[in-house]
Image 1 (cartoon, rainbow, N blue to C red):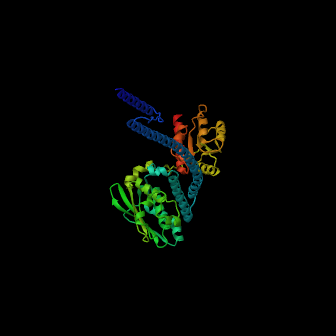
Image 2: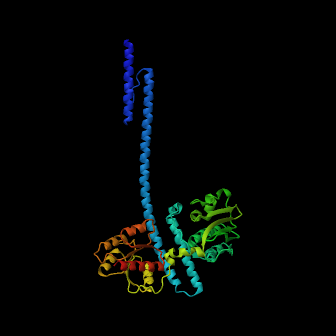
Length: 463
């Protein structure tokens, strides 16, 4: 009887220890362990408890380690995102500022030229600059292409002129390699269609440039024909065919991936980033088009894609909502008696804006930074202020805030942001601090005239 009571007491004590230990582990005391110096069966139970506690402690420690690592990675990613955004803002500004001057003066020169050959050369400069800007936009914000956050326009254009200009741009490259470059356009395509000719040019230029790069003999042919004709739209099939090195079948899908080329040998021999075909595919897909590749080693390549375009009568409704750059501003809509304060630190861009405004009769005053602009505006009234954002001494944001805090009669002046900053959210930021409108560089003269007239008229209406 005494033996039985003793066993019962030891069992009760051991079970109580296990229950207590389990409670401690549950409460987070993961270092809790059982004393296994007991009877054989209880020792096994306590040893099992200890093993489970060991596993629990290890897993908890591992979770904490992973959580800490994830937190550090998130902090590092957030830091790099800030660095990237800062880099993109500066890169955008540094590239767009000179491009604004190049394109602005080229367009200014275009209006005064009468020599056909010189005029054609200037047109090529402008078209090349426009293409470069589109490409720069895509590289500076490549994520927008992948997520589909880019916009397309629907404007009238002549397809023959577009393809002809592409051949003119690429002709020297083909001539250097002593290969042919030609195009054919089927007569079933109307003279005027509506769509995004700049994006189409970007696609065809990329495919044609690639074709020339990978072709050592023979030539490159660009072709276009209507494959489907409907009441309001037409589907056009484009082909870029070359007699180049060709691409193995297993690489056909891979070459459309970002930063990929067909083979390492191609990358070493021909160079390039491998981003071009990825951008091409995204641009075509986002316009609900399709692209296919037919190619084999040593047999050349043929890229074929289809896009839909509106017919002339169906595209008329789009003209009013087209790019402001295509809006025609009459010479009679002059800036006479209107004074403009140009806040811009870049001397070349100052000269460009002055020339454009004085051509329409505007009175212009220049301030090299925000501090100078505030001083001039306190002592003189202006009908509108053109405000750059990134400037020494005082930037455009701070300058705008100071102006909006001035007394009645001064703080209401219209402020137009004229900036090379094109990062997503920049326009919203400008409007939030009190600017009236936003215009990115490079800009077109007609866009500038229209925005000035609109803002000044709006102020007069509210006055």
